Image 1 (cartoon, chains in turn green, brown):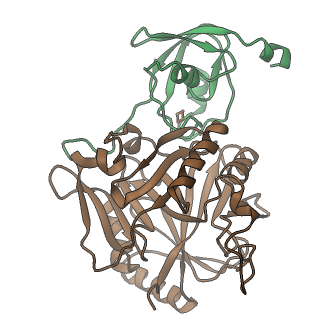
Image 2 (cartoon, helix red, strand yellow; image 1 turned 60 degrees about the horizontal axis):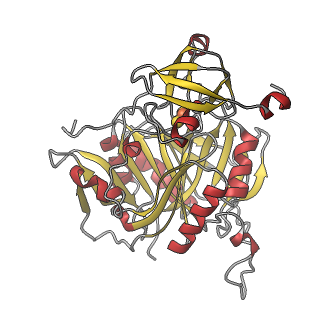
Image 3 (cartoon, protein in one colour; image 1 turned 180 degrees about the vertical axis):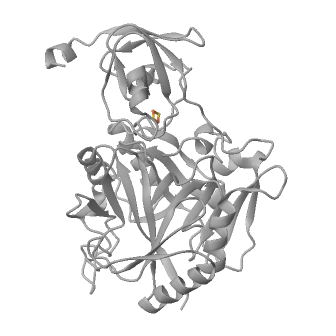
Amino acid sequence: MTDVQLAAAQNVVVTIAETGETYRCRTDESLLTGMYRLGKRGIPVGCRGGGCSVCKVQITAGAYAQMRPMSREYVSDDDLAQGRVLACCVRPLEEVTVAVIGKLNKCVTRSGT
Amino acid sequence: MGVTGVMRPGHAQIRVLNLEEDAKFYREVLGLVETGRDAQDRVYFKAWDERDHHSLILRQSDKAGIDFFGFKVDSAATLDKLEGDLNAYGVKTERVPAGELLATGERVRFEVPTGHVIELYADKKDVGNGLPYSNPAPWCPQAEKGIAPTRMDHALLGGGDLDGARDIFINVLGFYLTEEVVAEDGKTQIAVWLSCSNKTHDIAFVRAPENGKLHHVSYWIETWERVLRAADIMSMNNVPVDIGPTRHGITRGATIYAFDRSGNRFETFSGGYISYPDMHKLTWPVEHLPEGLDYAQRKLHETFLTVFS
Ligand code: FES
């Protein structure tokens, strides 16, 4: 990625597969930042630093690039090969579609387990 | 003397995904003082008003989270005694030699049933807070650099067997329970706050689906106004904020939860109340967790029970 390309950051459409929700994300910001900044929902928002995994997505269409290190506790080599990544650590290069994998797994439920 | 045995939290070793980026963050944004680097490339920090050599160690890793959390005890004799007590209670311990951490004496290390490594030690070099021990000024320039908390205050850790971890701290290490969140059955503790001092908590545990998890390491600030200043500094530096500024009902601290550059949560807080071991515990039924967590907004922040590193 050269500075020239970065300077020419564009907006591309991101689609969240489950809900059909779309938003315009800059090609120099993370998929999660783009969503969060516009007040859109769909991908869970956690630490925004690649450490917690709640924002994990499967990129089902479109090219993307990693922009930050991701905690390998949650992202295996197989995940990387399959496009399963943390939405706070990757940016879109073109129009992309994502499926949400990460969950806000509650440690306890209201039924008190 | 009041505070004997285990005196206070002394250090947290945190894993970061990009060492220099997070070293810069802790130095310039949180405003800790860098005090050294060791042969393993770990970076050491202390809050400006702490006198011991360090309270935070950063280690480069490909996983975020916490390696261990350590407490300072009042003497070498206490260290030996507590090691014996732990062994008698069925907790295996090991000794980490003096100098393995810079400026630190021998440590007694053990694992609690939530999967966290806990350490005790008696010696760490007094490097001072930049002020003389005779006729000191109340603060120094470092107190104004970045958020500049005065001390590392406590940690909240997440894991499965909260009861097992709690019992070791209470039955062996002399901590007492100050506050708890209990499930709808009125018994099962979802989170506990434990003190070895006059603070509302020196360590806390939350029941979590995975063991060994870090919820946050907390740093103390003197006033609510300085908490708001911390919020400004976070926003100026694009720090992802989780909750706040607001006030916890639990422990009454005025707080901000936010994340470092590797997704490890930290807290900057002020307030609370003075606690004593004879005081009745305070209980928060889980349906009142929203106020317990965020008294101002009475809002259940889903991330509190779900986001760990
Ligand atoms: S929000 Fe925590 S890993 Fe992305």
